[in-house]
Image: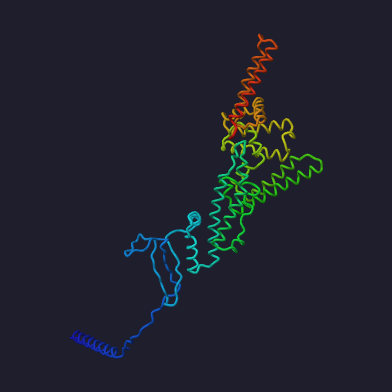
Length: 431
């Protein structure tokens, strides 16, 4: 009985809650605010809109049915009927120093159009100048490298081709003039005046080859300045001792060379330093003369100089020349050098090197120099002298010949020898 009363009570409460909710909905719908229709002005486009316009000379004309293969899209945006926006040009192509070179070769103006587009979109003038100078400097660094490699000396040969390197200063002036003209064309005369070029290009020392020819401008100029100071120091020392009536001091000269090397090490890396020593150091010059007739390869010459240069340079700093050494010191020094050369050349080529020390070979080298021959003539002359020496010994040892007959045979031998030497000199002379 009690349960029935509770059930009726719960049902009554639910009905009362439902009635309250319906009353709430009715009251809420009557209090809703009305919607107000309004309109907002459509914002007009500003001049910061990126515009892409491609002229006919840059990309093909747009057809009525454009495709995804076309290089650029054409879109012109006008803010009002009275204001006309600039029309920069954008293409799917990277513009760099190569485009500069292409324009100069073909007479096109793609790079100039590129600069005009940068200005049209508001690129600051100082940024444009930075871009142009970077491209121009990159272009002329490539040109300088090409000239430096083309005119590189054969530093491993006894006869250096000085005629080729002597043209480098003029080449440098010509390239700098081209550079100035290009700056004027794209940035104006004032910019060309402000951008000082590399006035020291190849002025004191001909920095050629793929390493030295590719030095950054500031490093190139630093090496030129160091070389100029080195010449001034050595020249000043020579004149000072000459005025005092004294002979040049070999130790002092070696110390000046060490000072130059020390300055070069501050601006050149290890590879650049080695390339400089291979071409321009005194020890490399002496080694070229020592190897005259061996016909060493570049790799052989490089390895030999790596081995003997530290030995020779240290001896020069302490004693100056071999003549200042005691017999024991001289023997140790020559033994160290020979060991370094043997390691660099290997057993077979070292035997060829030992031939250069033979008296007959030294005579052949002297003969080649006397007749104006090149290093290629030395070995054939040496072989001729060696064969004729054996013939002369045979004549002198022939007991069947009288003294007069021996003298006549020797005269004929000398005459034949001179004729043969002249023929060798002629056949091996550089055209």
